[in-house]
Amino acid sequence: MKMDTPKQFLEIRDKPVIFHSIMAFADFFEDFLPVVVLCKSQMKRWQELCRIHNFTLPHKLAEGGATRFQSVRNGLSLIPDEGLVAIHDAVRPLVSRQTIINCLGDAAKYGSAVPSTPVVDSIREIVGQTNRILNRETLRNIQTPQVFDAKLIKKAYQQDYSSSFTDCASVFENAGNTVHLTDGNVENIKITTPYDLVIADALMIRNISDKKNSLL
Image 1 (cartoon, one colour):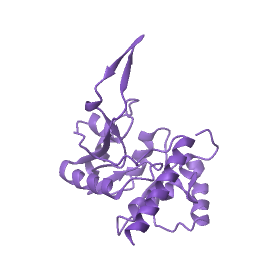
Image 2: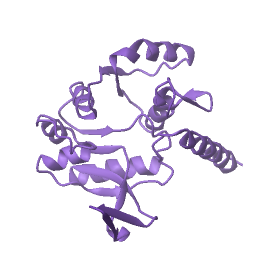
Image 3: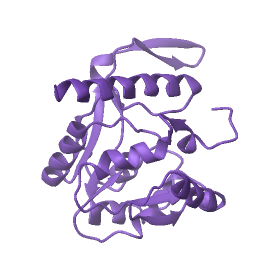
């Protein structure tokens, strides 16, 4: 992002990105108690942002680790062993209600649910000094929330860390479990660059307009 402010704290529509991400779930669940995982150095900043933006939603805080793997494991330590757990990137504020429904429904049935969308670009793999085309029909873009049976994912996170763990699904799979793919939404982008902020802002404006029109 090339900014001093962590990307989850950058503002879109006058609110930090992470607040939008949390509220996507809070608006769906009646009794919602999220676990927010932050590095220790950002804890005071988080409290200040909650005060400034009057963010009063009850939540738990977990201290992040040196890797995503450690951060997720720390967060999982604060949840019960029974039920489903949804693990979501703080910088995906545009997850849709339908994606959440898809993930929860499929995870209850299969033990896991990972949202995905088709790959629309041509993809090439670099092999040594050359490259080759891949069949995009067999590839998927992976998103969050990744939803799992709580007991299974907590057990998976007891294994040793590997650099091959790029997301929760890879940890779950390496522990011998099967990852079930479900439908995501293309707007559910991960804000990583300044360009993504512009796109997310435009999509939020469109969503607000759609909601207003639906009430006419």
